[in-house]
Structure formats: C-alpha cells, structure tokens
Amino acid sequence: MDLAVVIAVAAAVVFFFLRAVRVLDYQWEWEVIPGYFLFRDPATGRLQPNMLLLGFVTTIKLSVWSMVLGFVLGTLSGIMSAKGGFLSRFISRFYVETVRNIPSLVLVILFYYFVSSQFLDALGLDIWLRSQSDTLRGMVSFFGADSGQINAFVSAAVALGIYEGAYISEIVRGGINSIPAGQWEAASSIGLSRSKTFRLVVLPQAFRRAAFPMAGQFISTIKDSAIVSVISVQELTFQGMELMAATFLTFEIWITITLLYFILTFSLSRSISFFEKKMAIRQ
Amino acid sequence: MKKIALVLLVFLLMSYSTGLAGEIGSQLAKESIVEKIQKTKVIRVGMSTFVPWAMKDKQGRLVGFEIDVARKLAEDMGVAVEFVPTAWSGIIPALMTGKFDVIIGGMGITPERNLKVNFTMPYDYSGMSMVAHRQKAKGFSTLADFNKKEVDIAVRMGTTAEQAARKHMPQASLRLFENESQALQELNLGRVHAVVSSAPMPAFHALKYPDKLFVPLEENFTKEPIGFAIQKGDYDALNYFNNWIINAKAQGFLKEKKAYWFESRKWEGLVK
Image 1 (tube, rainbow over the protein chains, first blue to last red):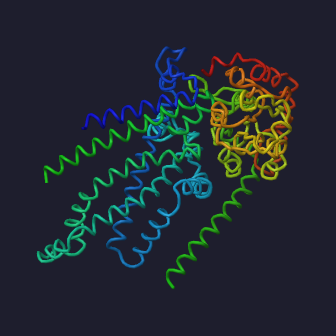
Image 2 (image 1 turned 180 degrees about the vertical axis):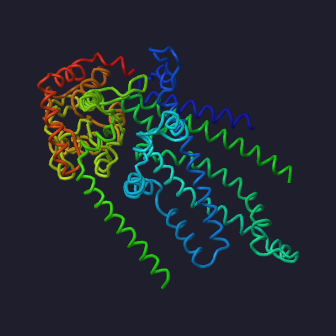
Image 3 (image 1 turned 45 degrees about the vertical axis):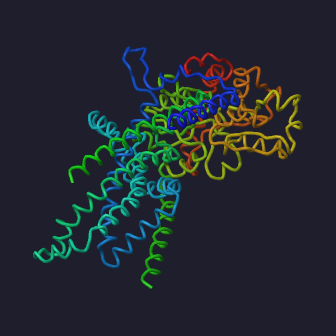
C-alpha cells in the first residue's frame, strides 16, 4: 500500500516536471550555477565566495541577529502581558496586535524609509565604521555587514526583530499562563515572595515549555528574512534577483535559492525535533 | 479614555516624526553632497541591475556602463566609490531619504521624476526598443500593430519603458514586473506579445533566442536623455556633476565607454 502511494507520488512529480519542461521550452544552463557559489580568483588562484554563498551567509547573520532581538523584545513583552499591571499589559497588547496585524513587508519598508532614516542615518554608523581600523571593520563585516550595507542591515535586523518579537511574546505569554496555579500556591506556602516565585519557579518552567515553539519561530525568521530584499539588503533572495537580472537564468537561480532555504530550515527543524525527543526522555 | 489618549499620543508622535523627516531632508540639502563626499572620502552611488548598464560579473564584481562612469567620477574626485544596489521601484525614495548620494543608474530624465529629484545634464541618450515573440506577434512590424486590446506587453515596473509603452501603445494591456528577467521570461513562455525596454537589451535578447524571438521595429521608438539624479536643491553638486559630464564628453570618455558596452558584445564573457 505504502509502496503504491510512493510510486504514484513519484510518477506525478516526474510527470509534472516533464510537462513543465516541455511547456517552458527553456534552455537550461545549470553548469554556470556552481560558479556563483565559489570561483577561483584569476589573480591569486584562491577560491573566493561568490554572490549566492555571500547571500546565504547574510541570510544566516540576519536571522540570528533578528532572532536575538526578537527574543529579548518578545520575552519582555510576554512577561509584561502575562503578569504586568494594566499599563504594561496595554503596551504589550498594543505592540503585539499592531505588529501582527500589518504585513511584514509594510513594516520593513516603513521602518527603513521613516524610522531608520532619522535614527540610524543620523547616528552615522556607516561614517563611523569607515574611519575605523581594518581589524574592527573586518569584525563588523564578519558579524554584520560592511560600511556600505550596515545601515540597511541594521534596519532590516531591527525590523525583523520587532516583527518576530510579537510572535515570541505570545509564545512566552502562553508558556507563563500554562503553569498551573498550584505552583504559585505551593511556592507561596513555603514562604517565597511573588517575585521570587515568578523568577525561580514559574519562569524556568515556562521557558522549557516555550523553547520548542520558539525554535520553530527561528525557522520562520529565516523564511521571513527574504522580504528584506525589498530594502536592498544583500541577502539570498536579493542576490538571486540581482543575478537573474544580470544573467536571465530565472529558473536555475530560483530553484537553487529554494533549495538553499530548504536545506537551512529543514536541517534546523530536524535538529530541533531531535532535541525535543531527548528532552522528553530526560523529563 | 486612557486608551484613546494613548492612541492619540501615538498618532501625534508619528506625525511629528514624519515632519522631522522632512526637516532633516532640507537640512541635508543645505550642506552640499560634494562637501560631504570630500569629508567622508567616499561617494555612495545608488544603482540597480540593468544589462548592460550595471550588472555583476562572474566574480561578483559590478561591471557595466554606469559602473565605469561612477568609478571614473570617484577617481576624478579623489574618493572611493561605494555602490548601493537598490530595487528600482524604491530607488527615488531611497535617494530622497539619503541612503546614497547620487543615482548613476541609467535613469531617464522625465518631468515626473524631476519634480522629486534634480537631474544633471544628460551624459547619455537611450531609446526604447522592443523584442517580440515570433508566433504570437507574427507579422507585427509597426507600433500600430501592437496598439490593440488583445496585445499583452511586459515591462519592468517604474521604468521609462512603462511610460513609453503606455504612451505609444495605450490600447495594449501592460504586465508589470519587478525585474527585467521576469518580463523576458514571460515573453519566452509566449504569454505576452512583446517586451519593451531600453536599447540595446531587446536586440541582444532576440539574438540569444533567434528561432523564438525577433525585433519588430527597426529603430528605437523614443529617445531619452539619461542623467545623474541628486536630492533637490543642491546646486553646488549639480554644477560639479554638470561640468564633470562636459569634461568627460570632451575627453571622449563617454563615447568610448558607450561603444564598448552598447555597440560591442565583448563584455558578454565577463558575465556568463
């Protein structure tokens, strides 16, 4: 039975691709794609990363930074929402509902043109960076972006962080609220104050429950990061679109990009479920 | 009540901050970007990929007509050049909010754009050309053939190609794409009759797929001046760039580069 299903699905996929190829009538040029990952510098003879690999790395850097920021924002907002007074609850709800109810694309564009134009550009991060030593510039470039790109990169990371933070806020709030009231009562009966109960008893358990949904959110962040291509951050999607504009290899490059995102998110989701099983056994 | 007050406060803050953006914009214009470029020792150039104006070569370096122009400009100013690849549809807002100093990206001088930015004198002229599908647009040889309701034309969004297509073929239905490659893909699939774009790209593309595509019009159907775009009100920079262009023309630099990028195909090996 299983075998029949597998064969049927495989046949459908093959049929679909054959048909697609026939309808498209497209000249495939796969042989040039590896050169856009790595190329041999004719001057030095050393292998150098090319656009697609650079874009892939930028996507990872961007996702990590926005997740760190989203984690901090989301945890704060989640705690405020679950345990705060009226005003902090209101602020948290305002943040979560605003961000969740506007498209991420709009948020990124608004943030880049309005907010970051006043704060980031006025800070002069790029000008400051240009006047620094090569070591420091190399380090900033390694962890973020170089001076030409730093403003757009920071703006994108912050906008994405704010966006993901709203979802993480809900995850954290859910985690805190899921801790049964009995825990509070038990802690109070052994004489712990409310703030100590929260810090020492409730929060650790809440985080354990929130850990895996949060890891899932990280995978979402990687996928969401594709939208910052609209503000010209040189991540994977942007690099791919630039490459397509220059070479007209539309399908080869889109398929390659799709595979790259898939490799990244699939390997992450596999390792998360591996840890999830391990944790479940330990508990 | 409290909620309404908070919402009002947020709106006030928002309107204040957009007002502030305008103020900062006018302050920036007071200090000429020429001064700023001299101070920071770098000129930031906004551009977008357009074959063969600007594109990445096999090693991921930028090459093209505009890139050569910008590099020469930076060299003459004695500063480094930093290219800021930007999505074409957002390139004017990005210039207005100071994401870079100048657009050197094959931007056609149009009255609409000129209301938002200042242009230098033209350093190049380009024209609109068309590449069409052999089967779908069989026998089409004039603009009038394309100016029909059942004709679909693909163009890149926000370009002068879009305007030219609207003006010269008002009856035809337009399909807008973010990138040229998507428009050309649509043509290769035979879903549209033709793609309108700046010469020489349509002719190059027809050469690549000679059995599927052809160039229906013998000559370009528009002539467009191309200039650098800068933020409004910076006359010092306008003066500097205008005189640079006069010089580059007089020295034959622009003509030589134009011959290399637009009349020859020697550069093809660089890209693929």
